[in-house]
Amino acid sequence: MALNRVIIDTDIIIDHLRGIENAKEYLKKIKDGEIVGAISVITEEELAAGESMNDILVQIKVKRLLSIFEKVQVTSEIALRAGELKRKYRCRLMDALIAATALELNSKLVTRNIKHYEKIADLEVKKPW
Image 1 (cartoon, rainbow, N blue to C red):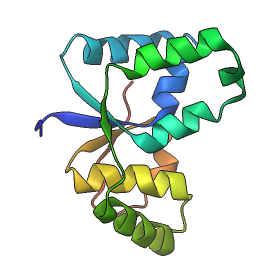
Image 2 (image 1 turned 90 degrees about the horizontal axis):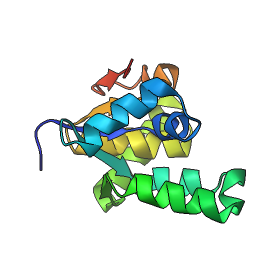
Image 3 (image 1 turned 60 degrees about the horizontal axis):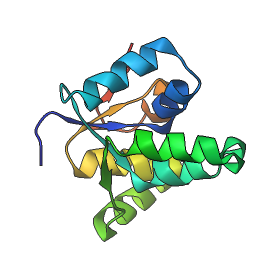
């Protein structure tokens, strides 16, 4: 377990896929090993559910991009913590699972969607740019 690992929220990956330069530069730091980046498998699900994934070329691009990240499975501990977060903070299940992943791994959550996570106690949220 890397001490400087960050959990990347789905919005950052979507920004990269949309060609947003800040996102491309940030994820390049992960690809180059400057930052240890991880994603919850929930992020894979959120991306797979997108309409653009009907395009085989988009699927290939997404799979290639996701290969730079450590994938974090939803463990029993993460699931239980996510349920607690959802109940306590009334957040969406997917956000609760991603937040619980960061909390269980003692990692920062990198997102532009600060409002989705700011109310969760003990969760360190970082805006990437």
